[in-house]
Length: 273
Image (tube, rainbow, N blue to C red; front, side, top):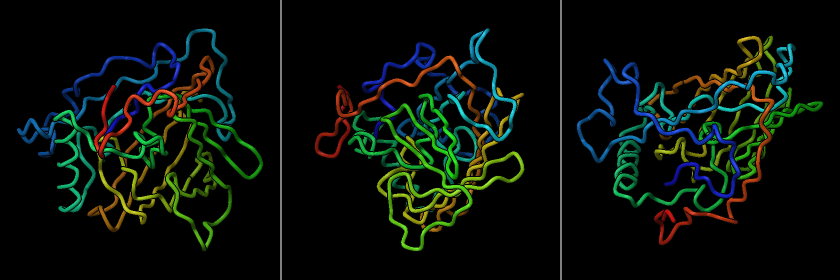
């Protein structure tokens, strides 16, 4: 599979930061995982440094803790979305073997085709790990996230229930409510053709995601605590936290996957061009 390629996007300069090897704190004294198993064919892709702070003189954040509107940018991007950096999701044995197969294919230069390389939506929670900016818009009864990557859109319907006849979709169906100053988002009905993360962790259409959005640091950061559960592919639910920087100086760019898809698949294999 491919990661978030620079296909058609005129990204701002600071989004193209170099990849970094895992920090010592990420690798020291942690459980034995794929990445430190001693098998080079199972090496994970290193993290990507994300957004810096807004330049001096930028518009200050809105002081209202329930106003999330504006442009935000992920501080650091991980290919693997497990409970901690470098640690894989708690996949059941048969799905761990699928992940190993996909990582080995990636490391051999022949990554498996995934939804993003076919210009389909990335899936969840993978989309929220995009190293591209997002814009949040709030309207009565709904919060909307406009992603620069592939022009993907998430809609959170406030104070509603999921429909009884839920249709499966790549980004799922999301309902939300406020708990104090925290926006709690519940997402279900996610198409199993997508992956949990860029390394290729599997989920089923029973995947259930709960995200908690909360402004911190005087509104200059958006903390998102995510819990992933899937009774089909995971041994148990797990959680992780990500941070987004307030970036009022950034305007999300046009990103047309089909116009310049340098990762278009050939015979089921992603081919970088």
